[in-house]
Image (cartoon, rainbow, N blue to C red; front, top):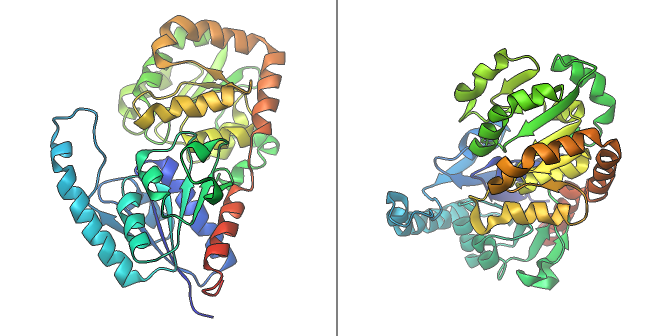
Length: 368
């Protein structure tokens, strides 16, 4: 049986990188001899995170179009695209993959386009409820599209869609038994409720500004905070560690324990975060980023909150609505229980395995 070669492209944010790594890990678990190559964008976090996970990666000179039209990046975009397509073509020719898997991000466009052009089977893993333009274009030639939400036939060929969900970290599948360990790990007070604040893999300026502004309010509510500021903002906000009941973290290495400790979660609504929060099953206040393509974070949050499984507060409404909605949730145990049970119903815990099942079908003639 020949050694199977798998090329994986996805990056820019943790929401694209971690699903890509999870899929590769599951393939490797089933078929240890598989050869992998990741392809990312040169200056993005995947160039650090993927090697740390034990995989080889090559970088392309690529970035997205920015909203500010007259920027250096936008002027360079045509040159970056041509360079990336040329280098993606070379990578595909040299590596000769049996399948190419794209999880989103700048680099996945040129890589999967060239894989398709060379006749390599491609699989797209679309995390959001509203796809970006790259995956819409790639879907025309992709053989399979694994999605996490219903009603994506509006964007993709229906006969290619498989609803699998988004890969989540396996250590999140059972967190209730870790609550005591989590309280000790974070040195939390037993008598106070714990609020977990998440701004995504890079942090969120507007959420950080909100939390700092509301510290006196939180103190009056007698809650304690695990506040993930993101590494971009940690230096600015770490001074708040001096306050009672507040701890700031640039990054949370034990997300399983952070989720286990939490009574209420305040979070962005990137696709991977939403999928994790469904598995975790805690009451969530979603604050979507309005600064992402096609406003997909708002659409992700609406897909959850429309089912009564979370609370949505848009950034523009934070000053007017946050204190009222937070206090209402904190004091209503029935509401907390209902939000927990409804969001848990939306969890797709076997997503990684189901995606790799689809990978197997596409390359079974090769030898899997």
